[in-house]
Length: 367
Image (cartoon, rainbow, N blue to C red; front, side, top):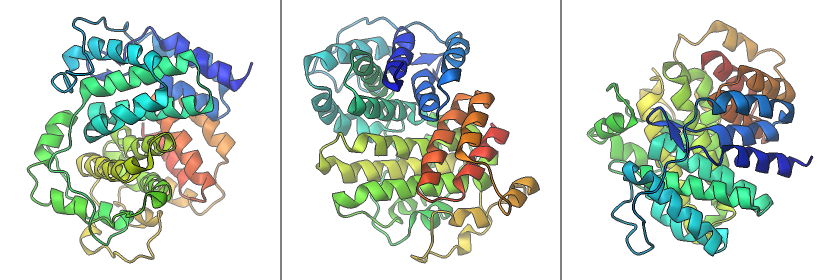
């Protein structure tokens, strides 16, 4: 059986399940199944899906129709989830999926942190799959991802475009931090009240040419993967999304018109900044952090908190695991966040990021 067929089977198996379960928890099945296949763990996919699907709930039914003309009012209304799913299930069969994506991406992008970025991530996975093969299960998966995004759409507070001189490692270290308890909505509301939040977003050096966006997104992903080991112990699950969200934007890039590339990068940056401000462990040296252009994506590994496990620090000086080892470990671990982060870390490793595989191993320990 071809890998393409196996991915379609994953999507078909999960097509009757809803995007959420137990309230706000996101259905990671399509994304994690995709990641397992791409990491060479196809033999584990069926058993993993069988176990995971027991937690899921049925696809929600529509109540009132949403038309192309009246989409603004129900945008961000989770009570209309079934209606949004029904709308996109129709639209994905009425026009080419690339056209559908080009229409809705700029509408949905400002709310990209929706449901802790899971809708964006699911969309990125679906777009990559469709770019490889246009099949009915993949179109249905894109429809579910977009419907989920529209229902949970949520704008970031006091968003600012990058206009500074800092590279990503320094800009992330200099972010303010919030400690308010609660879910991401409550935390985002608190972040919007932090005086330094708008200026912190603006500190990043902007990308001015669309052609530079792919490399800039890759660098942002490499930076957040590298920083994971030293900043994730405060909330290891949520910090995964600082890497998987910008990587999802990168996956969608090739299917988008170039005029959407810079706004996509800027939104990805603000999402990463927000997740870092809300969930990353504070870094004691950030007040005096250098902002030299010579900083690389692994810079954050050297200035993390002292409570980082000694074992992890020692392992960085010895021969580490292979990509195959890490992929198998993620599959054995079984947590959907560990699986998704590991796929992204392996990609980062293939771009030359030596910190990525140790970061994945740390995720397996912390999650």
